[in-house]
Structure formats: structure tokens, C-alpha cells
Image 1 (spheres, one colour):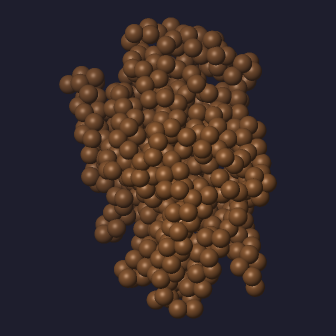
Image 2 (cartoon, one colour; image 1 turned 30 degrees about the vertical axis):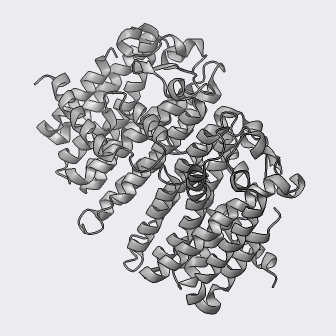
Image 3 (cartoon, chains in turn green, blue; image 1 turned 120 degrees about the vertical axis):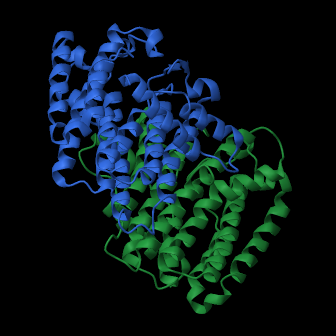
Length: 296
Length: 296
């Protein structure tokens, strides 16, 4: 099975999980529609895929990981909806579709984003395995890991500095903070949460954390390059926006060649940290390869 | 001690709790400033005060209630920041101070709101009493109660219908949904969460729920009346905005006299449900009196 086929199978699993946990109930129909519009707009589902893989890597409880996986994708989706707002990046296209506020209006997009963040927390809380003495604490620690990664010390902190840095020119320290927090935190959390849920030991947790940090950083660098050199059609979003917006990017600060070199280094770091897992780390190895070489 | 003195003492306790749990860390300073600006903008702290009172009513674990109390106020605060945004109610004044987006700009106000919602969840998760066998499950059930009340089936659902109903004319069913969800859910949650944390029985839980539903509804009706008849200076916010915005309000749908009658009925319902608590329900009784008669 090629990597892309494997990834497709895994993202299909995530689609099923999302269908199970997607917001329902007697809420106003338009709110549910707006939340579901962005949640089911496609995407690689990389964060929940990584979580499920970490749980498998450590022979953990796959069923208990499902609500955590859904929560991760909801948090990622809400962050995209809010990032795309006119007051932020003002994007009209995302994953090849009109952005949430273009379809539903600004007020509804803000509320749909709030709703998805809250729903992520709700799903995790409503599926706490009270009766499962073996995994209860691991589940709660995984939940906490995800929440902290999404917050002001994680993703939101990164997004704020990203907004504040627009048009301010090169600042290596700010760039590093943005990458570590804005995208890094929510790519590291799935692997750490999967390990915590499964009861991995400190050494194993450190290894997947280091792998995730390298892959997450590389992911952002490739994103930055694609915004310069990619094809809008393949990406499903506008290109050249970073430069037009005066965004702080790695190629902008360090140049394109240094970015390519850094991606190779990060790939090596990622792979090195998988050694202790032997063949069981194969999917994560191929994920690092794929993310370093992707063109969308 | 007069009720106002008693409430002041209790809201001072909440200020201390908020100071303990307010967002800190190595996040961008402006994000922390924006989050804290609204969190410490004053207000009666009614939701956390009600939570702490419910815990005392049922002789529950006061220390464990502190993070839940802080979370409630953070959720309430984030909802005000987002409601005030130009795309929503477009308010410039809140509790007598410039609203968040007026001071920090729209992008930062959206992110500060997201940050406070996320921080509420984070505080609850980071303070899970893993080692406390007696109260662990109650704590988690209280946390879940708060999260659900804040979400698409609770407060956010109400806010959405409120936005959608603007300028649409009288609709009793929509009005009822809005009041029950937009303000009702997050005023009922503190009492239910306090009861759940403390291990109250079904009958007790039903009684505080019924009390809270009546008080929450009455609170909204008084708000609607104050927007028509109140003094902007006392309220610390603009008046006459509801009518100008074409908002669905109880006086707008049922008339001012019917609103006054309803407030009296709701007050009776609230008080009736406190009977089983005897003298211990005194503060809640006086709270119902106060909320029905308040002029700000």
C-alpha cells in the first residue's frame, strides 16, 4: 500500500469518527450547518491521524482515543475559521471552498468557531471513561495536553504573535515562537496525547515529542515555501498571501535555500527519534517523508 | 450585613480566585493584557458566586470549586467580548469601560475571547483532583455541566438565535429559546455544577435547577426592562440598544406590564424551590430578591 493509500484509509477512519461526534441536537440549524460546513470541508486530518497512530504505537485503547481525535480536528477547524476572518487574514478560499464567513457571514463564523472549540471540549468531557480504572487518568491527561496546546500558551499565543508581527520585518525569535506555537503545538499534542492515554513511559514520551516538534516545524516551513512556489489549484487556497500580508515566514527571514536545508535537517531529527520503535514506527517515518515532500 | 455587603464580600472572594487562575506564562504580553482587561473589568461575578454558594449549601469541597468558579467567569467574559464585536452587537461600552475591540482592535478581541474560553477549559483540566477519590467524579461531572451549558446546545445556541432573530419581529418561541439558552444556561450551570461537585442527590439537584432556571429567566427580563427604562450611567452600558437593533425582547413581545408580572411569578417560583433548604437557602433567597429588584 502506498503512503497516500494508507493515509486515505486512516483519514477515512477520522471522517467516520467526526460523523459520530459532529455537533447535533436542538441548536439553531444554521449554527450546526456552519459548524459542519467547515468541519467536513476535507483536509488531510493529520492531527487526529497522528493521535490514532500514537495510540496504536503504544498498544493503547483505540476506542477511547476517538473523542480526543474528533476534538483535535474541531480545534484545528475552529482556528482556521477564525484565522480566515476579515479582521485576521481575510481569506476567501480554504481547501478549495469559500471560507466560513463568506458563506455564513462574519457573526455566524465567529460563533461557529466558538461552537467548535467548545464542542471539542464537550466531546472530550462527555466521553470521560469513569469506569475504566486503567485508562481514566491517561485519558484526562491526554485531554489536558490537547487543551493546553490549543490555548494562550500554545496555538492562540502563536496566532497572536503572527498577527502582531505582520509588516514588522525579520525577527528570528518571533518567527521561532510563532512556528513552535501556532502550528507546532497542535501537531505535537496528538502524539503526546496518544502516548499519555496509552501509558507510555517518559523515554517514549520524549521520543514522540521530539519527533513531533521536528515534523511540526518542518510542516510549517513547507507551508511557507508552498505559499511562495506552490500552485493555488493544488493547495486549494490563495498563494503569495504571506508576502502580500507582510507575514513573518522562514523563507522571508532566512531565504529559500536555508529553508530547504532546514527541512532536510528537521526530517533527519524526526526520523532519528523513531529508532527506538523499530518497524512499529514505519507509518510515522513515512509521514515525515511525506510532509517534507508534499506539494499541497 | 446587608445583601449588597454580603455580595461584595463574596465577589471579593471571586476576585481573589480570578487573580490566582488568570492567564499568565510566556504568551505574548498583549494577549495576556487583552484577556485580563476584560476579565478584571468588574461585574457582579454572579455566576461564580452562585457556584460557591451551591457548594456551601451542600457542604461540598470549597477548594475544588475554585477553578470551576474561575472558569465560569472566564466563559462569561469571553462571551461578552465576542458579543460586543462589530460583526455582532457592535457595542463600545461595557461595565462603564471601552469594550475589548475598541481598546485592542478586532483581531486581538477575537483571539482574547478564544483565549479566555480555552483558558476556562484549561484551568478546569489542570486542576482535576486525581487523588481525591471522594470528589473526582463530582468534579468531572461539574466540569462537563459547565462546558455543555456554554456550547452549541447552551449559550452559543442562544446567542446564534438572538443574532438571527434581529429585526424579524415578535416570535414567542424564539424568545423563549434565546432566554433559556443565551443567559439561562450559564446561570443554571453554576448551581448544578456546585451540586454535582458536592454529591447532592437528585431531589436537591432538581430544586436548585428549578430555582436557577427561574432566577436566570427573571435576570434576562430585568435586563430587557433596564434597556428600556434604566439609566445608562448606573448600567455602565448604552441603553435603548435592543429596540434600535430590532432585538427580540420580552417587553417587546409581551409588553412592559406583562414583563413585570412575569418577573414576580418567576421570583415566587425561585423562592418556592428553596423551601427544602430552610435557613441554609437564605443567601439564594436574597439573591432572587435582589435580581428581581436591581436597577443595574
